[in-house]
Length: 171
Image 1: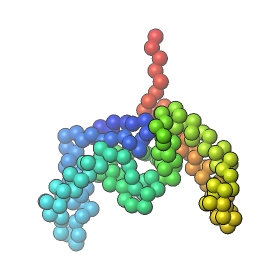
Image 2: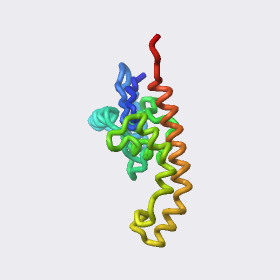
Image 3: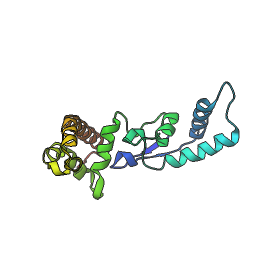
Image 4: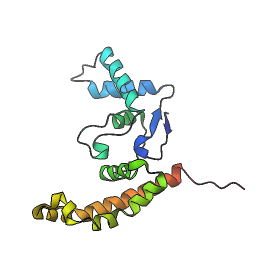
């Protein structure tokens, strides 16, 4: 089983391969890329293995974080049977990643998410889609959903911290 090296920002956690993991990647690639019973070439499979192992060392970027393309890291993790962002929905993941912006620590990111709703409420109309009255209404209609996502992201990050970075006290 691969080893997950957790980062305070879960989007940046990496996966280190153990013995036998390359075969899991190979099997997943062959299964996904076999077309009408014709498997992909060995060269293609080797290129994909190299490609995906590189993504296991990088950040999540794709549908899983609200970017409009496939996350190669998620594909590799699925082949390996691991999930570095388990139960984190894409809109929430986007907010978790944003919480770590400007070099914020985990505790600062958690505080940033805790204040997410307040910041939305304090946004002046002039900053809502450049102050266009029609678009201000669109912004305002999305705020309840954004607040729920912010709350879920906050709860998820607190649970992630408590599970993977618990505070321990020495006697």
